[in-house]
Image (cartoon, rainbow, N blue to C red):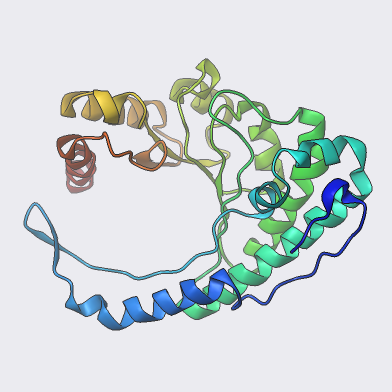
Length: 263
């Protein structure tokens, strides 16, 4: 896709799902499938299976932002009609790639979408309803129509949008970053428990990076308690960072393994 400055001209077209960067990812996927059996993976002596997968991360919103950067917010205010055309094409491209990769990997569909930041929402509720909600809803209907569940990734303080995301049809909300009072597990469970499954929560910025293994275990216990009776998948609040100790990372696996064995 190509965007001309100021949206003065529309020259957008859908790329083939196996072209450009995707071609390299597909080649990597096939090479890894061929050598996966050569790896011997273990955690604390326990063998682990190596499952090779391929996905098309992001979604219509991050794709649009990657192409237009912060100009996207100006386009929303200045030229809604062309912005919707742009979002429609980003959605078409994303769905095309998701379907292609799912067929390639032989799995049911899923798709994460980004809509927030680390400290506060990046668009107003009105902008969310006009420019985000329709494309999340379209994605949810497409995923559900193929028998899948929508795993929705949205960083940061997105609590103002959770009701809308649930209305749009998401099934799982990730990564539950505890960056604001409204994003604490007790608050989320009270407001949205039973309506959506939560994924994440173990803080990569404070607990995993500067805490101890006991802090990690206490955090997991807190989330399990808060989300008791709700859907909850224990995981870090985002990608594990380089300053997280091996001991803290292992504590997540050990705590979750112990919980599974108790059940």
